[in-house]
Every structure is written in structure tokens, then in C-alpha cells.
Image (cartoon, rainbow, N blue to C red):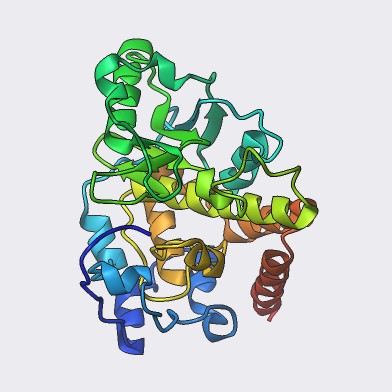
Length: 328
């Protein structure tokens, strides 16, 4: 668990859901229907927090669509729309999720953008100064790396190796190593530096065998599905932060904050109406590629291939509602 002070958040009322979504009259028909039709049937309100949940430990005010649209943020356009995935350390362990599968599934959340996996780098490539951020976690007894030093190295790589790369929108570091954001914290799943367009996240604790991953045998089918689902959720969550999103407190949503694997598992692999509309706005001129029915259909196909049963049922139900109302 992350070490921090108890600063609970107040949860929104129904009227605040409407205010957060904002005026929808001028939206095109596709996105307007997606954020206004069948909402109570498909989207659960934010769950009542349990002791130790993210919102009981972190102050969250929520972010309306209007507030999001006023923020300074990176917007994809023309050829400036590539999200790089930078593997750090080995990914050849039999329990490691497939980066290719994660990239393919995640691309559905960002229509108009492209995801590309970069060649793997090693922690030994970091300067000696950056390697001072390595420590042994006192609970897991596993090595951990400081997120700020990793982001610093990725920034340096961007300046040196991709200085003239006009395609780059964001760069996300991914690793099987455990990470932490500062000395007082036990760990963190991921961290995004919005100003730099760089994020880092770790698969390590997504494996139910952690911290004994090396000693664990091959994944069962159930474990592989669980690890992949968690990896998708954390990865997409971190990328969306880079677009300027704050945590969602309006509905049960992929953008809810999480303090534990239990909270990650409660999060759905879809965006609530407020965050879906924000993502539409985030695409800038590339929103011409933003078609919710097409997105959901691709998500549905991905869920079938990857055996994500709960998500498969949700996307099937949501598509049925949107297609049914379109025919009326």
C-alpha cells in the first residue's frame, strides 16, 4: 500500500454528474448518444469507499469536462500522434504479459493515435546517478526503482535519440520491476509526468504470485487473464493521465484511483460518460476518427479473443442499447 495521510474525498451527487458532463446539445450524434443514452443501465455510480481505498487517503475534487477543456494539455494532430511503449528490463518471463497484445487492445481507447513498441533497454543503461534510486523494499524484499529517476532517463533518451521525432505524442516506460515514487511510499503502480509527456508503470504487483514471481510456475489460464486485465487497466489509465485527465469520482470508471489490487480489480475496462466525453475532446482535430460504435465493436472483438468475460458482456450490452436506440 502507498503511504500517505488520510485526506478523504467527498463523493458527488447526481446533480454533480450532470454538471461534470456539461452541455451535450452541440455534440455530434455518435458521442452525444454514447454519453446520454442508457446511462443508468450501463454505468454504476462511484462505489462507497472502503477503509484504505484511494479516495479515503487522497483528496480528489473531481474534474468536469469544462475544467478539462480549460487545462493546458498535449493534443494529437496530423503526424504528431504516436504513443511509444518503452520496455525497461526483460519481458521474457513466462508469467509476463504480452506487450504486443497490450498495445493492440489499448489502441482502441485512442482512435487517431498509433502505438509503437520501442527496443528494450536495461536498468544497467542508466547513469550511476540514476541508479542511486534503486532500493530493496523492506516488505517484499524485492528491488525497486525510483520513478523520478526512470522518467529522468526517458527524458534524456527523448532529447538524445528522438530529438527530431515529430511523431511522438507520449512515451510510456513499462517494466517487470517494482517501482516507488518517493522514500516514504511503499510502492506505486504507475506515475505520469504530464508536462513531459512521459509515464512509467510496473507489471510486478499485478501478478498474484508477487513477490515470489520467480519461484512461481507457469500461469494458469485464470491467472494469465487476471494479469492481462490488470495490465491493460493500469497502462491505459496512465496514458490517459498524460492527456490531462484527473481521477474520476463520478462513476465506476477506468480512471478511478486505486490503492490496491482489490481496487484495480473493481475498476471496469471502460470509461464513464464524463471521461468518454473528455477523451473525445482530448483528440483535438483527430476526433474525426472518434466513433464510439466502432471503438466498442473493436473492444468487443478484443474481449472475445482475450477471454475477458465481464467486459465482453458489458460491451455487448452497451452496443445493443446504442444500436437499438439508433434504429428508433
